[in-house]
Amino acid sequence: MTVHATIAAKGLLIHGDYVPARSGRYFETTDPATGALIAHIAEADAHDVDAAVASARAAFEGEWGAMPGKMRGTLLLRLADLIERDTEALVELESRDSGKSVASIRRQDLPAVLDTLRYYAGMADKIDGQVIPTHPDALTYTVREAVGVVAAIVPWNFPLMIGMWKIAPALACGCSVVLKPAELTSLTALRIGELALEAGFPPGALNVVPGLGKIAGQALVDHSDVDKVTFTGSPAVGRGILEGAAGNFKRVTLELGGKSANIVFPDADVSAAVRAAASGIFFNSGQVCSAGSRVLAHADIYDEVVDGLAARAAKVRLGCPQDAATQMGPVVSGTQMDRVLDYIRIGRDEGARLVAGGARHGQQGAFIEPTVFADVTPDMCIAQEEIFGPVVSVIRFSSEEEALAIANGTAFSLAAGVWSADISRVHRFVRRLKAGTVWVNTFGPTDIRLPWGGARDSGFGREHGRAALENFTEEKSVWINVA
Image 1 (cartoon, one colour):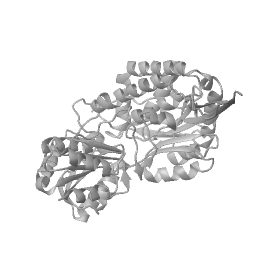
Image 2 (cartoon, one colour):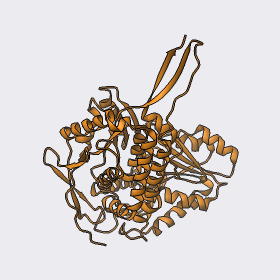
Image 3 (cartoon, helix red, strand yellow):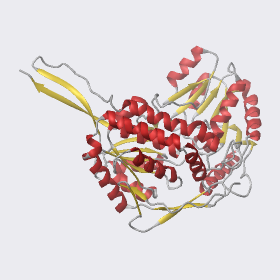
Image 4 (cartoon, one colour):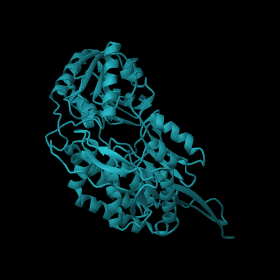
């Protein structure tokens, strides 16, 4: 594997400057493929969060909040251009920090970051209200105004992409942002903050405070001067955020876990379904909230689906994430590896049949073999709980009603897939599946123009598209007496 130099210690990015944490504490970030130290990063606590929120409030009440939408859009476009200029450096940094393959970052993450920025740049001067006639002696209308200071708390599986899903619409609306990246993957967030300053964003419009979720993240959630929390992560943390947000009735958007069902009927193109199902669970080492971790296969094609997934799992090329030929890198950390391996043990203990993978790959780094379980029943732990690793459970069904009951039989409602040539069946399933997104004869594509989110333990609210603009604005009614 390529040997990289250690990066100099990084501070917190508050009000346009790198500053040390008030406590003087730093934490390590390491390469999950090798375990090698990448950098020491300042560890924010409540005092540092206070400073970042004060900076964001000053920006919102000052230069940034007064800036016209057209100019905000121009700055977002400049930021996109700078990210595009530094694409290769960002790809390498993201790969080293998260273990994601450079191929997947180039193919998906960076293009999505640029698309998100440019989409919301175009929306920044189109956040408007409407005239609503109510009385002959009055002019009555609505306006949309920025909600204020936004705490954006992002996960480690797509640090750049999900971070930008929150940053871009918030900034487009005129909000100021305090970004709390996952402690495992903070480096590209800090770099985006630097590039925002280079693009011309005023100090305080975007602050970045790496730190532990239970300390820095909780301080943001509890802070009385934060107006909005947008969070992507686990359901357990999401519940804690709701409790903390109640203190000052913060607005909250939560995008949480998933246990997506990928349903294959016997009239489907089975080869295409298997190919997409393998990608849907092994992409990013299975660390995807919408991963197709449950493949529901009709009894008539069950063995064909199981054999196809096992064959594809055996061919996945694991290796150094910086190698362009690598198809799957490590999971994000040794802790996450142990968690996934424990779920694999549970699956075997529950009586599921292991047909591929099931073990750690190699002795260095947090690599896990692509794993396929057959003969899984819907009540098994591995069919109910989010594993967040390259582990798929194949479940047999015999009728549409049985498939629907299994698909809807978890606490999650984020996404689902349906494979069938019968358009009537497809429409029936789209209506009845409990999922925020349903893919038909494909699995996994997203676009910033389409709303994204779920229900139940998958969270609430929608990101992307115009829905995101509603997340970061408040509607005000105006009544002008003209009599």
